Image (cartoon, rainbow, N blue to C red):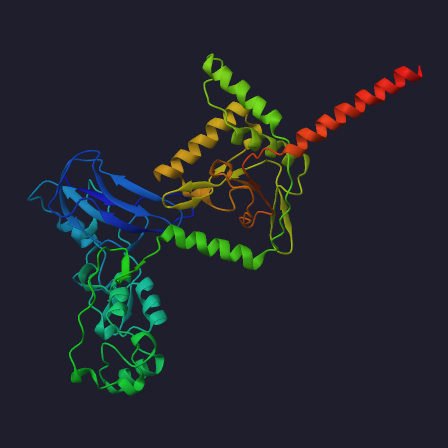
Length: 436
């Protein structure tokens, strides 16, 4: 019995995912637990495991496609098995035909033992060519003439990477050139006289004068351009979101930073005490300095609720509970998972929760709902392990504030001040004794 593999829904806020890599293609054998494909949301990366054994009979999308959640991605079954009913529900390359069309029957997509999703991804039609919404937006941004685009999407659909390839090969035009070409049918050269080889209106009709140069060799799917001493690599979807969020924070909020030092000897003593208890078996979790810092932050937020808020422009949202965000560095970029109701946890429970969300971020299995900036009420960013002495953390909007933690630095003046204080006290006591 054939089984449909759908695009999973990772969190309530996720509506679509980018399919980054197929691990199994049409005709490949699949065992239970094999990784079928990798995909990412705007916050995290995931891998989809096979729940059944068999052969990949059909694949409905290509790498790089943006796929709506719960949409059919592939079919797994036995070789030679009839899957016409499933193919009838596959994503269409063009705008779906009207419901009254005789060739489309409701019974064709109803399989008694398989749930098939009838909805197809939104497709914008440019003339007689089918193009995805993301590809159309990119084509308008880069002024790419669709007549020069080679479609590699399902059933001849133009997808985002097709526009990028066309732009790299010289299919870009100025808005005026695009308008003139549409009205007159004139051809543009592969490389025009405009900025970065963009074809201008005066270049139209010159395409036949010389053959189009071959596109430069691409060393990898993430490399957009390369030369003798450089490479231009495509940003991942996650890093794009990080950059966009940080830029929005700098543009839309007043960035005010206060630097304050604190005596770390007591917290270091607590850390040594916790480490000793772990070695003796009295604790089952390794409580770190960061865990102690986060616990202190939680208590401070309960004492000063004005900071445990979201700034909403013309209003402030106050929270009765502390939902603590922790900045985590991963190979895919910076993530800020949230520990809900952190003020209800003991120091050991908080330590477990912080380690759990951090590990999930690094493995790419984190729930996107707890990565949302709205999920946390306050964020801690600790760069102490990297030896950073001073930095300016960026507020994770709509949160009102963020705490940046630096490395512990020995400061001689603290010891000198205490020594002087003890000397003064001794001298004062000596004077009082003499006077008596």
